[in-house]
Image (tube, rainbow, N blue to C red; front, side, top):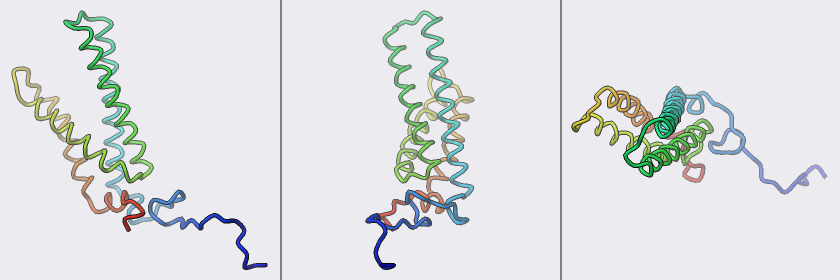
Length: 156
């Protein structure tokens, strides 16, 4: 009777990357790169929430040339805040899908930063504030430890 399985569930290897039960090993799970990347994403999400609050405050207190445009911009930034928040939470959980989503978001921010450096209303201070964490995040997203941590289990 000792050879009979107790249940029909498959065995879960707790050290397998991407498993539902994971342990933080010293190689990739607790790497400084993934922790820094997660922190950057949470800060970006927090910054977007702050922008949403400022936009809502402006809609309520300032006359707008187009209220529809002001509301549309606020909704778009709110969607971005929700998206980046989800990516940050997913990164904290080491979800494989977050790497691609984070790369896309960093490229969007790169375009925003470049735009902040040029034009009649250039704001180089904001450009640098957006560009520096974006470049750090992009570099971290392509480090070996981050790629190993976020690799899909079926790709091993």
